[in-house]
Image (cartoon, rainbow, N blue to C red; front, side, top):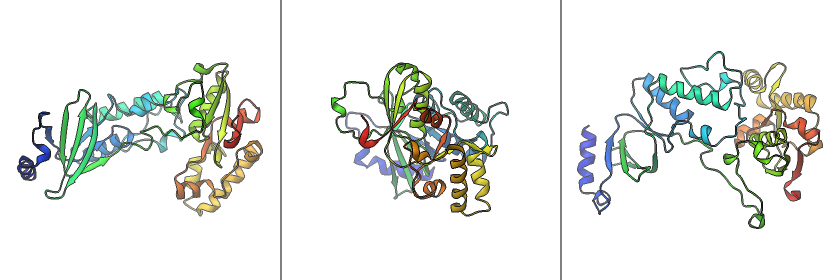
Length: 321
C-alpha cells in the first residue's frame, strides 16, 4: 500500500490526472495482477493464481465470459481437438461430454470453471491503454465502461489474455465495392440455413473456411472454396486415435520430420492426393510448418468428401469466377 500512496502523491501533481471538466478516473488498487480478457486463457490464469493464493481482477469488454465463443462462432462448431487436450488447469471436462464437445458444451464448461474458482470478471470494461510507471514499479491500466465511466486499475503485474482472434481480419479484395451481394465475415456467420439455394464464395481454406463450406453444403447451398495458399489437410483421426494425440505421442520418440512424413503417408492412404482436387500441400510438413510459422493444419470433418463428390467447388485465387 505504500507504493500506492507514493503513486497517489505523484498523481496529485501529474497533469494527466488534473480534472479538466471531464472528472478524474476512479482509481482502484489491485494487490495482484490485472487480467485483460475473460476467455479461456484469462480464466485459466485467474484460477491458477487463486490456487496459489494470489488475488487478481479480470476485466472483460463484453457482458459475459468467453464472448468470442458465445457471439462470434458458427452454430455447428465443435472443438477440433479431443477434450483432454483442451481442458483448463485444475478441472477436467465432465466425463459425459463427448470427445469433441460442442460450442455450447464448451461454454458451459467455462462457466462452471469460473464458478468453481470464484472468478467474477468486471464486465463491460474495455481497456484503452496500459502503461508501466517505472518511477514506482506499477502498471496503470485505464478502461472505459459501457456508459463512458472511466476507471484506472493500479497493479504490479499485467496479464493480457485477449486472444488471437479477437478482431476480424478482412482482406482487401479488388472490386469488392462493386459486388452487389452480401459480404459476411465468419465472425458473423452462424448457419448455412441463411443461404439455402444460393451460390456462396468462401475465401480461405483454413479450419473455419473448410467447415463453413461443409455447413453451407449440408444446408443445400452451393459453396465454392477459394484456396489462396498451399494447405495441409489431415484426417481428424487415424489408426483409431486422434491425429493430434497420436502426433504428440510420436514426437516423444521421433524427430518432427519423421512424424510429419508418417502423417503425410497416412493422409495419402486415407484421402489420396489432395492436390488432385485443388488443395496442394506446402513443401514443409504440417508439424514443422506449425512450429515455424504458427499455421495450423486443417483437420478434416467431412469437407473433403464433399469436395471429391463435386458438391463443394475449389477455385484458385486468380480464378474465383
